[in-house]
Every structure is written in C-alpha cells, then in structure tokens.
Amino acid sequence: MANPIRLGVNVDHVATLRNARGGVHPDPVTLAKLAVEAGADGITMHLREDRRHVRDADVERLMAEVSAPLNFEMACTAEMLSVALRLKPHAACLVPEKREERTTEGGLDVIGQKAQVAPVVRELVAAGIRVSLFVEPDPEALEQSALMGAPVVELHTGTWCEALHRGDDRAADREFARLRSGAALAKRLGLEVHAGHGLDYASAETISALPELAELNIGHYLMGEALAVGLPETIRLMKAAMARGAARRAAA
Ligand code: PXP
Image 1 (cartoon, protein in one colour):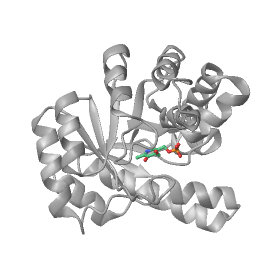
Image 2: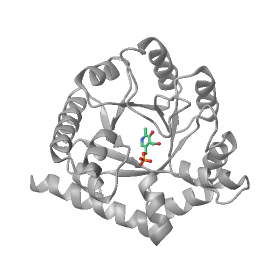
Image 3: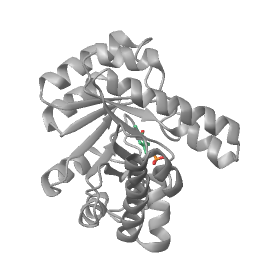
C-alpha cells in the first residue's frame, strides 16, 4: 500500500550550518534536491524575520530548481505576506516567531492574535496558496482555525516529544491523547491534519498511526541523523518508520 502520509523535510538547519562559516556550503537547495530524490514529498523552509538561516534567495532558488512542493513557513507579518504573495509557494504554514527563541516555541495564538492572523489567511487563500496554521491540539484553537478558513492545521508535537525525551511517560501519554483527540476534531471540522516539531523515528512511527494524519514536517532530527548515515538513508528510514505506523491504522 502506498504510504498515506507525506514527509516534508525542513532544510533550515542546512542554511544554519552554511551561515556558521559565512560561505555557500552546504547549500540548502542542493540538500533539498537530494531529499526529494530520496523520497521526501515536499520541502519546508522558514524565512525568519532576522534571516538567521534561510535567506530570500534560497527560497527563490528552491522554487526555481526543485519540483517538489514548498511549504513556506512564515510569521504573520506584512513583510512575509508580501514575500509569499510574490513567490506563491504551494503552501504557507503560519507560525509564531520571537527573535530570542532558538526554534518555534508553542503554537500560533489564533484566538488572541485573530486580528493579525485572519487577514493573512484570507489573502493567502485568495492567492491560491494552501494555508496551514501551526497550532496546539486544543479544541478552541482548532475551531478558530476552521472559522478563519484555513484548509490545514499542523499540530504542534513539541510538548509530546519533550515528554518522551524526558522519559516522563505520564506526561507523554497525556500529550499524545491531546494530539489524538485534536487530530480527530480537526478532521471533523473539515481540516487536513499535519503534525511536526521534535519528531524522531520512534515518535514519527507512533503518530503515523493516527488515521487523520496526512503529513509530517521534520527537520532537526533528520539533519542530525544525516551526519551519521547520510541524508538519503535517513529519509528512507524515516519513511519506513512512518509506513510502519500507518500500517497500524488498518490493523486498529
Ligand atoms: N513544523 C513547524 C511549524 C516548525 O516550526 C518546525 C521547526 O522549524 C518543524 C515542523 C520541524 O521541527 P523539527 O526541526 O524539530 O523537526
């Protein structure tokens, strides 16, 4: 059976490594091509306000040179909206962004920041860009996401993954229950369900058993593993883990 879940590979860390030396190597677009050849279904790039990893030219080259769909991660700002409307990526994932954070922390506050988020969703949807909202798996956030007219939500898996890494089984079970019921509610609300943040082979396998899941977006772990075994092998192993998890759907 074909793998029912797409793997989006986030190449931001390749740009982080490049920028550490200030040169052109390693190139995130070259690694994105390699990822697609190895089975990635899409590529994610987060163009941050401070351009700390990916730069505008990387996104432009990716769109020109890589056939797989781009999931453009962006903050809800006027500047990023204009970049997205100019480049017209396949998808745009709206995320919260703070200058001082090391990576995206927490989901987008679609309730408190409705006035900022809703117009951005409207403009992107009107431009034919598939919008996803990176949210906590909470009923209020999911209901608000559907009301705003976003077709997709990406459930934030970071809290669950942190609990798994701490070995805190009770917290991990509680967080996974939130993800399970969040995915089910999102589907009932007519939303396509994606998930991401902090996933590794084991957690990707576990979450792939959720029947609503259509896509996982993964970066840090894949790039770390690629240092040891190479990116193509890492992607092959990740897709195999996702397929094992998805196979449990049929068995459930
Ligand atoms: N999804 C979103 C919305 C993110 O912001 C990130 C981190 O850039 C990821 C997925 C990937 O997280 P990780 O790098 O931990 O796999």
